[in-house]
Image 1 (tube, one colour):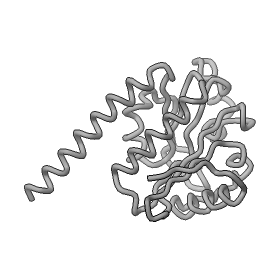
Image 2 (cartoon, rainbow, N blue to C red):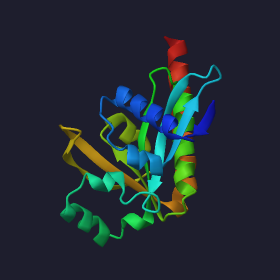
Image 3 (cartoon, helix red, strand yellow):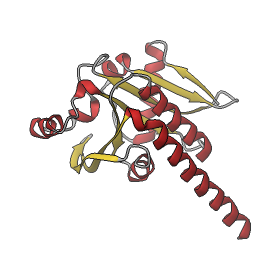
Length: 193
C-alpha cells in the first residue's frame, strides 16, 4: 500500500469527491482541505483505498469538529482544558468498500502518526459512524462530546474523541494488540465453519 500527500488542487478535489461518494455527504470544505494535510492511499494496482485529513489551528482558522458545536459547548471544552490551539484533528477519514481490514488498520495508524507529528497536546477524532467511533475509542479514549447534532442536514449521534499526545504510542500498541486478537479470532472461526 502506498500513500501520497495531496500535492495540488486536483488531489484535494479528488479526495473531496471520493469522500462525498463514500459518505453520502457534501463537502463544502475545500478551503479547509486545501490548508490541511490530506493523505490518500492506493494499493499496488494504483486503486484508491481511502484517506483522511489532519489539521490544526496553525493551518485552518478552526477545528472542523468544534465547528459542529454551539458557542456554549465549545466554551465548556475550553474550560476543561481542550482549547482548539492545543489540538490536532483527524477528520474526513474514510475507506473505499474494497479496502480490507488490515489496510484500514494501516490507514488508521498512519492518521494517528500524522496527527502526533503536529506536536499538539491532544489528538481528536470521531464523527457519526458508530463502528468507526468504537474502533477509534480504543486509542482516542477520552470522549469529549456525545450528542445528537444536525450533521449535513440530518440529525446524527456525533462524538468527539480525544487522547493526550504523550500517551499515544501506548494507546496504539494496546489497540493494535486488540485488533490482531480480533482478526485472528475471525480467521480461526472462519476456518471452523
